[in-house]
Image (cartoon, rainbow, N blue to C red):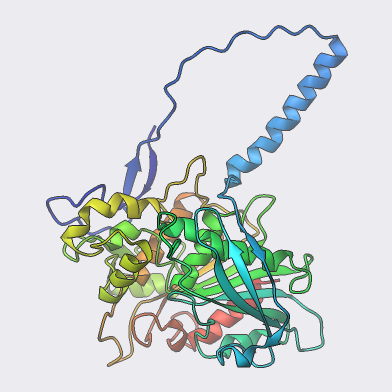
Amino acid sequence: MPNCAYNRCPGPPPGNIPSVVKGVLRCQHIHHSTSTTPHPPLHIHHSTSTILFITLLVIVAATFALVPHAYGLSSIPLGSVTGVSDPITCSSVNSAFYEGMNCYGATVSCPNTDDIGVTFGYIGPTGGGGSNGTIVFFAGSDGTSPYMDGGHYYAGAYVSSYTIVQFEWASAWEKASPSGTYPDSILAAACRPATLLYYFNNNSAIHSSSKAMCAQGSSAGSAAIAYSMSWYGAAGGSSGYLKNVELQSGPVLSEIDQGCYTKALAPVLTLCNSTSFCTTATQAEAAGGAWMDSAWYTANDETAINGWTAPLTGCGTSSGAGNLSTWQGMSIVDGSYSSVTPVFSFGSGVYKHGWLCYGYQSGTCTTNCPNNSAAQGYYWYEALNGASDLNFKVTGTQLCDNAEGVSEGTDPDSTGSEELAIANDMKSFCQ
């Protein structure tokens, strides 16, 4: 029986424009081994008690084997964080770090990638009433400056009750091998944010294991979180540790190949059309006027993809048709890694909320706007829904500031500030 996921364009560009997606299922073939080589019989003679003991072991092993199957515990290996420096004042590194933080330099090493430098800082809780947990911020774009979506609004909203963590990469985290030593795969490069997040979770100076571990990211930062969850074991099963994530305008790397079709051929998705995982007001606004977004990467995003995955070129143009399958293989939803299956069901203890731009403030949506962030993000949420993960919501933010400015927008459910709604959501579920 075929394994069904959600609509995307198969293989190289078809000869006609794909039909508008309205939650239509597509099917992928499951590849099974065709080997029929018999194994020689194994004759073992044991006492009855030994046989009972072995039977018990088999039952126990089978019981535990169900857990990885249910939550996909098989994940891509993480790397290491080494060479952590003595602390310095973060303001001397980058004013985007929250005031009062001390910063540390380190090196992140991952399989099939060049080593990369990172600077991270943390502070809190400052309220004196104990900690509710740790919140790690993931910046958009290439991550070479700390997360500052909404300025320091979110850090200020959390720091009294949480340890907050910011960081910046020495170069684009998505570029696996600037030296050319390894193939440039964003899926391989995603080991870096996943490894750093794991390091924060297991560093007792930053995070208490008895408290909640949470993350918030925008655009490519939300993609880094999704890669960490779906491919690197950060959520779900017995070894996952994330409790709550707030994903703004993304994850934008869910279906890279779909974004790299030409504009005319890229899929156009209809969002929140009678889907229970969208908030009540979001479903109502989508029903009132179809909420549609193209998965196509706008010019600035095409440039980024070409740079991160060079020598692959041609994202968004007909010359890139031969690279689509490679871009697909490094995507969050339809990526490919030997012996690893991506996870989209994380169990009832992991809450997720996606915040995508539905509408825009007058005069702000001009160059490269609207962009792909809503459609690309929606691919991941559809994958979660298809895997029967019910513990998440999607909000269509009104009056965004430019293509991805959900923090400056209005929440359709509360009709108040979206940044306040996001902050309240984090504080409610990061417990």
